[in-house]
Each structure stands twice: as structure tokens, then as C-alpha cells.
Image 1 (cartoon, one colour):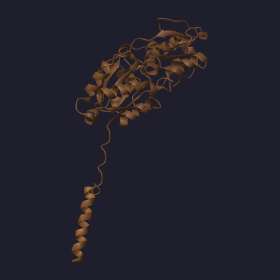
Image 2 (tube, one colour; image 1 turned 135 degrees about the horizontal axis):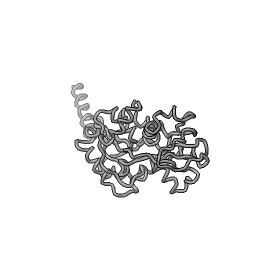
Image 3 (cartoon, one colour; image 1 turned 45 degrees about the vertical axis):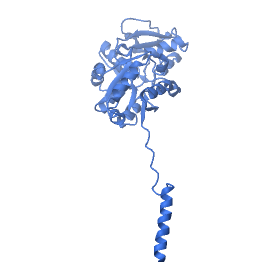
Length: 297
């Protein structure tokens, strides 16, 4: 009889706990899906996250998905994060985009700046170098101390090296009489030439023009001595597994929203006025040059 009473009491307690929700453990909330993205750090700026905030908020609202910016310490770090899946989307230069897409089968270039299919670089020199602007490649630059930007920069290294080889028939190590430098960013290249640390260098034209317009660089002190021919450059590249994570057709929606942006304020961090569609084939020339110069890792 006592055993029956104990069993009955246990059943009452168990029923009460279940009624109060104290039986089964609470279900864990489903983790929020986050689209993480990065951008190559090709300028000296601690404001990248802030500048990207309007674009991040805009795309999050339009796509109904949380976007999160993940900073990269340098060009190759951005490629490695994309390769490892730490970010699914990235704003790359032409070379880093090619490197990233080669590392991730099925990765796609989906958008580029309106100016990016006709991008170019400036060869610059300090006024004390004696070099003047020219429409032809400045052969006299070989006698000056010279710096590229980042080693993996399309506009600050890859294409300038290609044009040096094309014009001189030799590589930078043979052409320049002094060892070349690598500043790490376009802003720093201009600063090094302006300070006299290097007599000449090569830089992304848009960074130079922006610095001159803002009064940060005196064009009489740091002169543009040659403008390169056009080439393709920056692009948004996305991993193929984004469609698996966020649903079939999401990449196409992402591309549509990027291209639809009509407010330049949203693109200040890039900086671009508007974006246009891009495909991997748009960067076939960059791939060819990178392979020829053995710059693909």
C-alpha cells in the first residue's frame, strides 16, 4: 500500500513539473544566419568599418539577412579568410579576386565598380627627381628609388610590373638600379614619395586623385609622370555555398541588390559611385598576367 502511495505522489509531482514546463529541457534557439564579408585593406584607414556601415545596413534590410564585416590585416589574409570560409563575400582587387576564385571552386565575381573595367595606375615621382609627365613609359625612372604598394595589389604591383616588363623587356629587379620597396598600401606609397623616402612609386589612380582633391597631397610635389593603359580591377566575389546557406538563388539576389544601389553614399568605403554586373571572364586578362608573372599561389 505504501509503495502505491509513493508511486502516486511521484506521478503527481511529475505531472506538475510537466505542466509548469519543468520536464523537458528548453529548446536551444536556432542560430541566426550571418553573411560575413571582408575587403582588402588597400588604404590607410581605421574607419573602414564605419564607412561600410551604411552598405551593411542597406544590404541586411534588402536581403533579410544579417551581414557582418570582418576586417583583414592584409591582402593575403582576405584571400585566406575567403578560402577557409571565414567570410563568404569579399571586395577584392583583380589579383586577389583571381587568387580567391582559384582557391574556391565555383566562386563567382558578381559585381564591380562602373570604372573597374577601365582601371589604371599612376607612376608618380617627387619633383626633385627631375622627371616630367610623359605619354610614353618613363625609362628614366629606373635610376630612382622606387616602391610598389602591396605585393598582392593589382594596381600597385601586378599590372605595373607587367607594363614595366612590356616597356623594358626585363623585370623590376633588373630594371631598377636600387632594390624596390613595397609600401603595403596606396596611401603609404604616396606618403613615402612625398616625404622623399622613395623618389618614385606607382599607385591606384583613384587614391591619388582623392588625396589631391582633399588637399592631402600636393600634385606639384608628387607628380604623375605616366598613366598606364587600362585593365580590369576591383570586384565583389562570393562563395558558391552561400546559396546552400541562404537558399537557392540568393547569390543572384545579392548581385541584383548590389547593382541596384543608386546612392553613392552607400559605396563610400569602396569608393565607387555605382556598381555593375561582373563575371569571372571579365578578369581573364588579370589571370593571364598573374600566371605569366608567377604571382598565383
